[in-house]
Structures are given as C-alpha cells and as structure tokens.
Amino acid sequence: MAELDVQAAQQRYSSIAVLLHWVIALALAFQLALGFAMPKDESGFALYQLHKSVGITILLLTLARLAWRITNKPPRAVEGGFQGFLAKTVHTLLYVFMIGAPLTGWALVSTSEIQVPTVFWGVIPWPHLPLPQGIGETVEGLHETLAWIGVALIVLHLAGALRHQVLLKDGLLRRMAPGGKAGAAFALLAAVIVTYFATGMYVADQYLVPAMERQEAAAEADDDVAGPVEPTPAPTAEATPEAEETDTVEQAAAEEEEEEAGPPPVWTIQPGGRLGFSVSNGDNTIRGSFSEWSGDIRFDPDNPESADIRINVSLASASLGDATQDNMLQGADFFASAANPTATWRSTSVRRTGPNRYSASGTLSLKGASRPQSLTFTLSGEGLRRRVEGSASIDRNAFGIGTGESAAGLAGSVALSFAFDAVGRRP
Ligand code: HEM
Ligand code: HEM
Image (tube, rainbow, N blue to C red; front, side):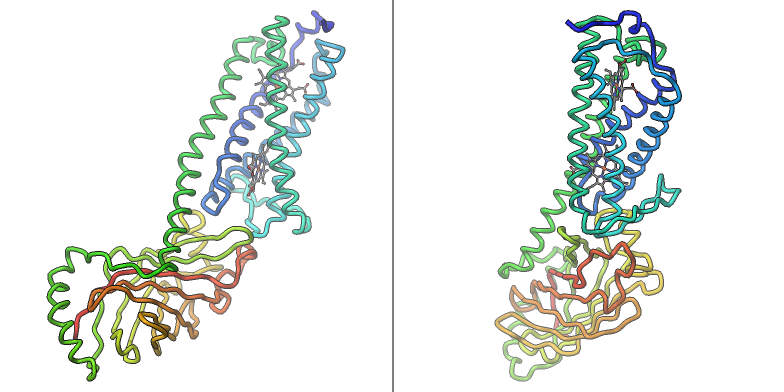
C-alpha cells in the first residue's frame, strides 16, 4: 500500500493554478476533438484557423502556468513510492504534451506546402517558424502522434485522480477543485468529457461528413465526364414543346440539308449543367465549380467548321465549398474578380476527331489576359437535343492565377470539366 501523507492531502493548489488547470483542460478537450474531426481538405479552412488560435492560446496559458508554478510552491505530494513517482511522471509528460502539441502544430503550418498565414484570433499576424520545408511530413506525423499520446496521458491522469477519490478516499480531488469542493471538480470533469464529445460530434456532423459527401459527388461527376457517353436525359418541361417539334420536323430537314450545310443551329444550354475545376495540391486535389455561366453556341455537329461558340463564366460564382477560401479565390492572388468579373472563351475553329468527338481551338480571356485555349468535347443524344461533356487543361500561370504564398503548392495545370444538356433550333 502506498504511503499517504494525510497532512499534505489538506493542502491545496492556489486558485490561479486551479483556474489555469481547468481552463487548459477544457481547451484541450475542445482542441483534441476539433483536431480529430476537422476535415483535412480545404473545406476545413475556417476550422484550421480556429484550431491554430486555440492551440497557440493553450501554449501561452501553459507557459503562464509553468511560470506561476515556478514562482509559487505547489502543495506537497500526497503519495510517495512508485505511485507517487508515476503521478509525477504523468504530470511532467502532460506539460511536455501541452507545450509539444502546439509547437509541432506551429512547425507543421510553418513547413506546409501551402503557406497559409496564421492570424491569431483573426487579429494578430502570427509568424511562421524558420524551418526547412522538407521536415513538413515528419512534423505532421509528430503532431498527430503527440495528440494521441496526450489522450493516453489524460486517461492515465484521470484514472489516477479517480483512484484517489474512490479507492483511497483521501480527498485529493479537493486540492485541484475550485473552492476546495470535490463536487466542483466532478462537475468540471463532466464538462471536460461533454466538451470533447460534443465538439467532436458537432464538427464531424457539420463539416467532416459534408466534406466527404462533396468529395464523393465530385469524384462521381468527374467519372461522368470522363466515362462513356450516356443517353440524353429527358429535357426539362420548359423546353419540351419546342424541342419536340423541332426534333421531328427540323431533324428531317437537317438530314435533307446535310449537303448544303446552311447556318448552324443555335443551342440553348439547359439548367442543371456543371462547370467544374480541379487542381492538385501536394497529396490532395482541390475541387470547385462555377455556378453562373452561360453560352452562345452556334454549332452543327455535321459541319463543325462553321461553329461559333462563346462561353461566359462569372468568376465570382466560383466555389470550393468554404466561405473563407472562396473569398481568397476572389482576391488579387487568384481571380481578382472585381477588376475582371467575367472569363470568356470564344472558339476559333472546331473539328471532328471521331464519332461524336470534337476538338475546339479558341481564345480564353481571363484576368486581363487573352491566350489560345483548346478544349475537347463529346456529344450524345440525337438531332437537336444533345448532351455535351468535355474538358480542358488550363495553364493557370499564363493568366497570373495563384501568385501568392497560399498557391505555392498548387500544380500549374488546372483541369476544367463541363457537362450540360442543350436544345438546338435552326435559325
Ligand atoms: C484534460 C486535461 C488535463 C490536463 C492536461 C491536466 C494536467 C495536470 C497537471 C500537469 C497537473 C500537475 C499540476 C502541477 O503539479 O503543476 C494536474 C494535477 C491535477 N489534476 Fe489534472 N489535468 C487534466 C484533467 C484533469 C481532470 C479531468 C481531473 C479530475 C478528475 C484532474 C485532476 C487533477 C488533480 C486532482 C490534480 C492534483 C494532483 C495532486 O495534487 O497531486 N485533472 N493536472
Ligand atoms: C494543444 C495544442 C494542440 C492539440 C492538442 C492539437 C491536436 C491536433 C489533432 C488531434 C489533430 C488531428 C491529427 C490528425 O488526425 O491528423 C491536429 C491537426 C492539426 N493541427 Fe493541431 N493541435 C494543437 C495545436 C496546434 C497548433 C498551435 C497549430 C498551428 C499553429 C496546429 C495545427 C494543426 C494542423 C494544421 C492540423 C492538420 C494537420 C493535417 O493536415 O493532418 N495545431 N491537431
């Protein structure tokens, strides 16, 4: 049986030490749950900012706590022997964790491929540590490992505290309880546990699950574009009467006219299309889409040479699914959309490269620059009701998109994909 110092058990930590102990414990419960549950892709951007600010706060509070401990004597140890040694070791390792976790986090963002600035609580610009980029992955692994070690230490620490309270009944909990009341310590213990699980469940539900669903949907959309040509879905109700008529009458006319090749049909893009983009960023891929775009399409599938196609894209409608990042996209480093709100692509020549397969050259005007830009597309469907699916690869540097530190890890080539239904009419 361990030797207990009954007198020492009556002593208490100072109220500052108690306050710091519990504030840090609550902050750690929040921080660990947030770290584990936040999505590790770009949609977690706002959560990362929060995670960084809370982490740095924990670091500063822990330094203050250590300073207080050095200048104010803690109460004598209650227990000697092996159990006493174990308690002391766990306490020391908890301090190592409380300092090491934020330091590795700080090192991790300082050596990351995308250099995202840290602004402490959105107010104080926080410098990056001068570390070589090469150690980025090591530091990331260390940060995660330390987090798990922290969880294990907290469990051990809790088991120790409960052993004193329940088995030894020496009232040790009172030493670290506000007002010396064991009940207050139990209430705080419950608060720590609730904070951990509530944070984890909320963040997973609001951010992690939607991020995973978006990723799946984007992967499916990409498969659609790359995959075999599908039958054309039924056109929307709006388009039906006219389309029905043109389809039968005009299609017959079109077949007759094939030799003559009159002016190409004019096509109306149907609602429900998609214009997406993706770019690789180190190990992951950033995906987004434009919600507002339109087209002025004159195109005869049998005589592609006569095509005249113009596509307008509202840059402000670009979204990666995260408000903070979407704002960044509109800034000077990326689209600078305030000065040039619209990107335009205009065809110069279109040729057939296979059955229902086309390649188009044209000019892309984006962010004040105009450069040649080709794209390819396939058609499915019949007559004047078609589905168009295609892609292009855009050299973002040619248009000065992604010039700042935050784009340092982005690949130069951005993959564009589009899919939409169109209904044609003979002019
Ligand atoms: C969740 C994160 C927690 C951390 C990081 C943490 C950390 C620490 C550290 C470092 C000490 C030693 C203080 C010193 O001597 O400077 C300590 C003491 C103590 N902690 Fe915690 N703690 C946590 C949670 C808890 C919980 C949930 C309880 C209650 C069940 C608790 C109860 C105690 C008690 C009673 C002491 C005083 C031990 C003694 O008098 O020897 N702690 N804690
Ligand atoms: C006590 C402080 C901290 C704790 C307990 C903590 C805990 C965690 C945890 C549990 C994860 C998830 C690990 C994983 O599953 O991959 C994580 C990730 C992360 N933490 Fe912290 N963290 C702390 C401080 C910080 C600080 C101060 C920063 C930056 C200034 C930071 C930046 C990050 C980043 C960027 C990630 C994501 C890494 C990735 O992409 O996998 N952390 N943290």
